[in-house]
Length: 481
Image (tube, rainbow, N blue to C red):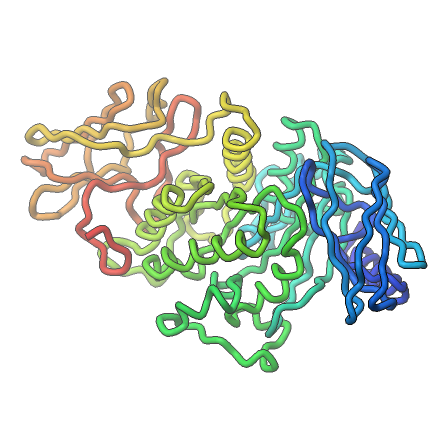
């Protein structure tokens, strides 16, 4: 199915709903996937205000009676069973509307900017790794996708453009590569229907994805300011709150298991501010959904050579440090490390399969009970110093560290003068011994703490370490001191 066909289907569905006496948001439609074993919201409009309607679910033959308010709006929750399908839902306010081909399974929302939006077909001159194989293998009818059409709004709206599609090679062409490949990993392991909702837009700030309530505390210290709602155009992707209003708010209440997030390129020079806005946004989304602290997994910014960088230490490295730390301070979060998956001159790295696999590993281990699935790479624990030698002791390396394919150039050490020099790195079990002829009395060490780096530190299971440092000497924007 090509882009024109998908848009036509969306238009026809919207037209049909507009003419119906019961109207539903576009994501309540034939082919949708509902989150299993939960109380999931369903809502819409009727032209029979102040009356009642009934909702009957085929999986349990249960009928719900719902009051229609004076404006014609109605909303309720329905109980979903274990994964399965296809099922149907009948909504009747005197005129009957049937939703068919309804699947019950696992539903995830994927959001952020261009690296999350990057489709399986890639961008011009920027391919997705192994895309030909991905298209060839896109035959699993138990994966469905819903791609939200980009739309900025000055105030929260109740509906969005888009349509559910079975994830065949045509449907995934313009769909998030990370979102789709994450679904593939989950479906193969869980053997249940998977629904992925994509709501992403390239070149956007986190402020666009925050609600007005969560953004207002940061407005004075932000380069972006709230606009009058009437002045926001549908293309104003960086108007604060505009994408929350148009591309997240309509979904609030739709049953999801969790969120995948890949965003930050637009904010990487303000790690201190992002460190405050990011948890505020997550807390706000969770409060609005009202289903507890649902999983929120995100992707670390991949190394990339910024043309503007001239800082003593790249703010990109400080931003990665902030992202790494955030997973330990924000409940039920996890991060996919990408230190080995960047591209020096391209901000949209091709290796989306690795990102998706790592996100899926976090989900499988943390919430789906597959405790044998490794999801984290080596992490800095502490260090010891003996004269010129500094020994890094690492966690998440019980079986040891993968030997370097070639001598690593990613480690540095410094003395009290705070001047860092390349260090020789020798692996000893789950520790690394660092030394340099230029440093007689070592004080601090860093790994991959640069703007551009290709990570080479892995545990035996093949998961990479994030960049890290033992010092806190540089922190004017985001600090430990």
